[in-house]
Length: 358
Image (cartoon, rainbow, N blue to C red):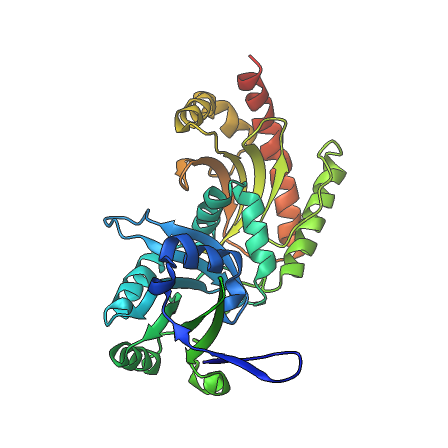
């Protein structure tokens, strides 16, 4: 119930809570759109990755909203227009399981499609949003937020039990009131109770898998590598380093760039790469075939290096790279990154020009 008080501080009317269905509010058309535009209504800062996502393997189920929180956790958001039924928690667990294998690279791909932006731009946006200094990639335990006009006792009992065994799951009740022709919505986090939240959270201990824990350390490292490379080859364009686990050198050709990259899976490695991600994968194949036809020449120019030709890098990409087993942000890797990129660039750039300008 809401009490409406006028300017004279007199009680004007009592407004009783109503349900969304009677007001004509729909899950996808209204609730989903409101939360996607103003995720703060759920009581915290979130960055929306996508809505109505249905590209899971071996299922046609459709996830309402996928987001990321400031800790660097994936957040599965399941919406119910009126009372959350007794299976909504199980449905959300299914979606969390589907999302548990998503990597930062894959999430950036999903959001890039959703917002029609480049993957590199999106990845920087996500990394800048995340406040957790230990973040390097998403873990396999997404959070769950259930959003409904109300919850029955069966659902709340299941949610409390799930929290007891370590599942990070939250219930947010959206209370709805009608005032003339307008709808007033007030969010209420009913599990966990705000005053008890610090005692109910079962967050796993973060394991530091990398030495590049703070975003500023990454940007400082890339700045050193780029400056070293430009000392050796001044025509390499200047570029402001960003706080990511990779850093690119653009070319005059769209969707093709050189790149340094740190990867921690399956091995901890530092990579020097040529990446191409043309709209048609068949064009990637033609370019890769061109490089393969000159493989002997390439190996002569890059002796003592294992050159990997990966035709299927991500959803649309193809990548050629050299790597070393190290993720330290030290002078040795500054020198290796700059010197290896110089040889790599001078080997592949003429062949790239030759193919694309013929």
